[in-house]
Length: 266
Image (cartoon, rainbow, N blue to C red; front, side, top):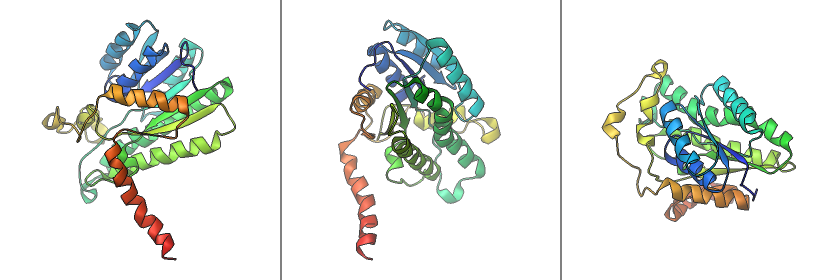
């Protein structure tokens, strides 16, 4: 997909962080944008900023863990704009505990938003995007933790590995269509992911101690605008993977080394 102007992007988790950066980048290319976020005020604020760039925008309060909520988002976007050309399944959360200390609610919350949220987006949008029979692209936000497991965030690792597999499956099965997909695997980015439990539902443990982590960042954080620029380039090039930190290449090589060695040992 190379032409953006006049087309439509949908971004979940679009009220802040990477999602907001993506929404602004698409608007800068002349795209209309549907901004979905569980925080209505954040979505509306981002939509106003996007409209300031001279394109149309709508804000849609959306809980990506709720399939019906994502289908309502899809209906609203298609009704409002007549089509959707870029879908960014970007909303994400994390919880911090060793795996033996995670409870069922921890797993349900993280898997529900990160993996099921991306899957709900695919289920709600994909068939209609294929039926449009014009160039379209899906971007699923995973993480470097979707390529290399990190300690203390087991549910996040598992969910993001699933997002990588989902995206790879999309590319395989959509090869004969005009829809393609990329998976975004960023390292540290200046977002509020460390405080994501501010939106954790009461039924799944309620808001945690996010205030303790307010303002903290992952190592070597970069600006969301830099990530968004890489995503735009990846869509244009139909690149399967989008990464952000060159120094993390060694981590990925370290993961695959033992796998290849196991084959060599046969």
